[in-house]
Length: 336
Ligand code: NAI
Image 1 (cartoon, rainbow, N blue to C red):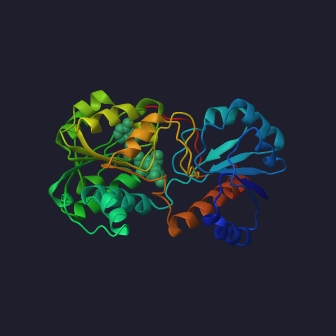
Image 2 (tube, rainbow, N blue to C red):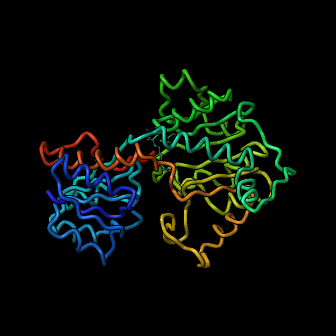
Image 3 (tube, rainbow, N blue to C red):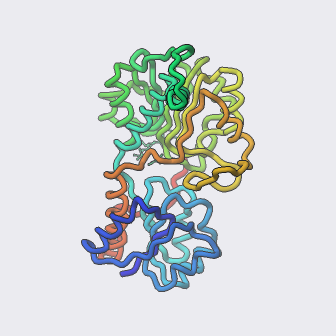
């Protein structure tokens, strides 16, 4: 069986080599995204695996994939925004994701981002590298004294809540489907407005769906405490960038950290842009603020997670081929 793997990077190579041997599949890997120029790489392959697809799966491209013989698309991500399973179904292509390759990876990173902001590490670390060892203006805050509001208490949100709880923080949460196990860790609020009103730190852990795009916008930010911190390791589309920028400039929001961002145009995370003038002016302005921490979608990126991502995405394809179905199959977009 031959699988075309788009959007790969060299960190995954050892795992492609390992699972090619162990699972008996042939991978064709490319660091390119799926585009009209690269779609022909899929010719002669049975399945396609992709990572963080960015607006690639148009009808034109999907119909060509179908002509080339692609029957399965196995995303190497938990989120599947950007791919429409209904469109794929029209071309008899089945879709799967990797729902849980390592929730701890993202949870630990979320807390690391919060600590970075709370202890000014984004300012201190570059300063020390220039031999500036002054400590003025570096007063931090303690996480254990805060109320943390977790939006979405699924696999990642719950792991994140447990770590914040370990710091001694009060952890409140909102989820459209509250979970009894999570109740042992978090205090559920009935509405997002209640969570906004009480949280010192708000952390997002929900999938991006048509109903929650720009959930964080100027009117929801207005409901938050003055001096709130916002952490986003879920999807960029959850936050309306201009509203966040304005709230940071007025100090309504004391700090923000994000691993994902709603770019105007294409997502630049994962690309080297040294020396270029970035075209997204809101991003440029956010980027320049001292109380903003940006990482290029790396929360998932641990040894453990990469291994699980390659293994499970391949097993999904094998399961489809052997049984016609897959436990990680995505049937349709759920709207809420
Ligand atoms: P999950 O499916 O286990 O949990 C999501 C939770 O959100 C569920 O409990 C669901 O009921 C809840 N939910 C959905 N819509 C909601 C809404 N509008 N309001 C409140 N609650 C809502 O998903 P998991 O594994 O915890 O992942 C969460 C998200 O994290 C993914 O969808 C993905 O976008 C993002 N992610 C980011 C990564 C990164 O590297 N930065 C890596 C992996 C996932």
